[in-house]
Amino acid sequence: MQKIELYRDLNLESINVEGVFGEIQSRKESGYFKIVYWDQEDYIFYAEGVPIFGVSYDRQGYKRPINYASYKPKSRSGTLSFIKLSTLETLVFKYKELQIPTPYNFVSYGTQFLAPVKAIMVEPKTVLEQAKSSYLSGYMIIGDNKAYKSMLFLQSGEVIAVYDSRGFTIGDDAKVLLNPEEDYVGLYSTEPEASLLISCMDTIQLYEEKSFRDKVEFEKIEKDIVSKKISCLLDANLSKGDRLYQFFYSGVPIVRILHTKEEMLTVDKVDIDPNAENTLRIFSMDVIQGTGRVRVEFSYEDADVNTSVIKELSFVPTETIRKLKEVFVEEIGPIGNLLWNKILQNNRLKESEITKIDFEMLINTLKSEIPDEKHRSIFIEKVRRLRL
Image (cartoon, rainbow, N blue to C red):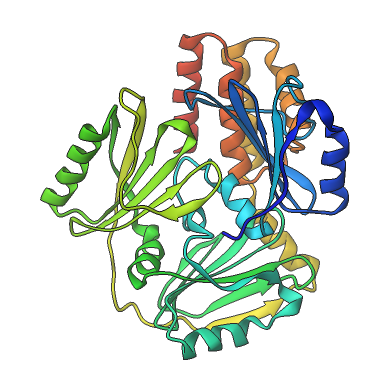
């Protein structure tokens, strides 16, 4: 990630907060605000001047959603910073909230070969030819200011898989649609093993769920994977808002990626607070090598038909949204309808146009609104069945 500090530790007492937010919006900047109080940190992410996601962490690392669309500081005792990122690298913080990881969770990992730019400024086919001549292993990412659209995986310069809203294309031809005015294109180089393993995520199956409270317990889980010689993805939600991804191939640890509150990086060791409540999931996966080359054809969107197809594939079915609303009202009571409308309004959501990412964040927001622990647990279980 290439980060630029536009504002750093501005005192909330001495600035016009609404003016600062307004400037970011008028300049159509991408990146995030970091607002620090003595007892919590708030993060609000912007894509081209539009707030897309927000989250708050207390000093123990517990996370809760915030009203990012119309954010108001809770007090004047604190500081404000704004860190500028590319639009594509900003979006990954939203994907970090997905319960089940996808290849898009790893966007911005690696070294930039082509910094994200508007599609109208580059010829993706030529970029792939340059990657081929450089024997690059890594991935190309394509998306707009709302969501990722396609991810192309490369091994030694050859495209071995393509991932989009329809799933994976492996060992076949793939057509990639671009909107030259709205889409961005970026290319990253990674270890050959990393791009290969991420390209095999269509095979992941939940193998085990565990909780751990310290480094000793975590290392015991790692050793168990090694001893069983499992090929898997270990996905851990750590205290203080960090998410850890670790790939294993036949029990051998390959790469360990830490997504913190502010960046994504490779780590050799992980600091785990003693006695903190941490959870993880282990996803088994089949690692298939030598799958062959995927021939990619790029085409440009110039008809409403193409756009409507993408939307249809990207949005959660309205029937699922309706059932989620019913479940929420059942567990919180008659006030549920009012809260539902307020939450959708605050997050700029329409029931007919809720993406899979927004769906996950909506669930977390609804869950936090249910005060009774018993009803909250029932809501979580009903939502789990809804996902099946």
